[in-house]
Length: 86
Image (cartoon, rainbow, N blue to C red; front, side, top):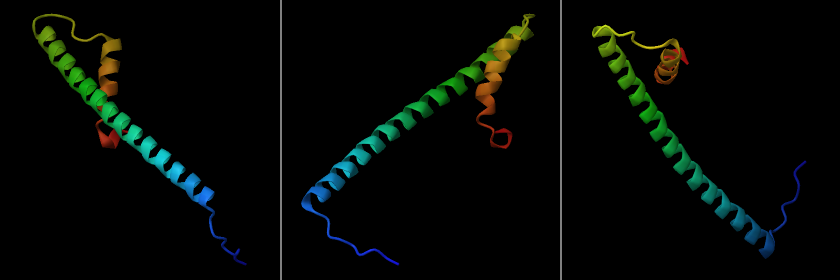
C-alpha cells in the first residue's frame, strides 16, 4: 500500500536546499582530505624506499643495515601498495 505524496512546502524546499548545500560542502572537504592523505601516503612510501637504499649502502660499507624497528616501519609503508598482500 503506497502512501499518498504530499506537496512539499516552501519551508521544506528551503530545508532540502540547505541540506544539499551542506552535503556539497562536506564532499568538497572530504575530497581535499583524500588528496592530502594520498600526498602523505606517497611521501611516506618514497621515504621508505630511500631508507631501504641508504640501509643497503650502509650494509655494503660494512654497517649493520636496518634495525628491526625501522624494518617493520618500512615494511608497513611498502606493504600497503601491494594489492595481493592487503
